[in-house]
Image (cartoon, rainbow, N blue to C red):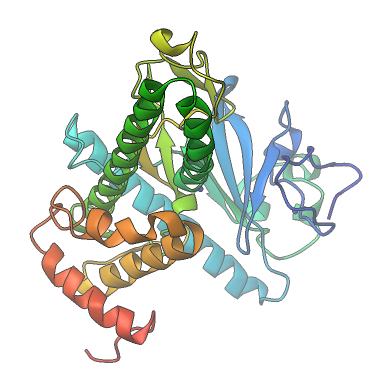
Amino acid sequence: MTSTDAANPLPPAGPHAPQNQDRPILPSPFHVTEPPPMLVTQGAEALLYRTHFLYPAQPAALKFRPSKAYRHPTLDARLTKQRVLAEARILVKLSALNDAAGGDEDGAVKVPAVLSLEWDIARKVRGASDSQRGPRETSSAVGQGAWLLMEWIEGRSVKDLLRDWDAWSKSLPTHAQANAQDNDEQSRRGIGIAAQQEEAVKKLLRRIGRAVGAMHAKGGVVHGDLTSSNIMIRPYTSPHDINGQRNGTVNGERVYTEQGPRSEQKTAAPRLQPPDLTGEIVLIDFGLATQSVQDEDRAVDLYVLERAFGSTHPRQEGWFDAEVLQSQEGYRGSFKGSSVVLKRLEEVRLRGRKRSMIG
């Protein structure tokens, strides 16, 4: 949701990109793209770049799976092809489900659209010159990996939004105490806003449960790596916060065009703004996803998400079961077989993530 070659320098990495001196070069044809792709993040299996599709104004996400030198070339090419195709098929399947649902949010599973893909980079394009194939692609029998080009999702991850919400929430007591000396009404208003924002977080959690349920039941897909980092909130066309102020995003970062409601601008002390938790829920990073309708697999998927929330968002951990899992507006109400999955989840909790050896 890469060793630098002198003839093919990597673009500057993003501010949070890991520094690694042994990065593979960009795959063809992206090693000659202008402007060059920017490294966003690097995982164990793939690197994610921000680039463009067809023209510079159309941003796109490039997921590059480099070949692994420790694997036999034939096995490496086979595994890389299987994995990139499996991910692409799942994304296409969920996108088609989203199109069929139309405006029905309950039946939709928002995922990045697939724009293009390539596997076996070194051999796929017949008649290409050595320069077109890239420096590394003619020096080895290995297929040199694969890439998947997807729609770029504007917005922020649930992980970042909840951390911003925590920072805003922690600032409330100090702000309320400062205003209580001058204006008790202002202090009470701050408490009311805090209650509204708490309900906004709970609503977001219920929507996450609903989206996961739709992916499991309607899509027949198990994500395999459900964390708050792999759930994005894409702003609506004209996003507004609970106070009606107009907000927007710049490079995926939330910016606020006003400091607060017009009625409060003259009296309220400067303070942090609560993050906008409205928007479309988009699931990303299906590199470990599988197509499965087994209750066991679905329960393990929920267990991974539950553990991720417990370790990353301790302030919201107490709400997870009630809002994400048990609420009729969350996972439990998303499909008829959810009760069986939640029952199996209790068993998964007792034995950890280990799969059942029965059946």
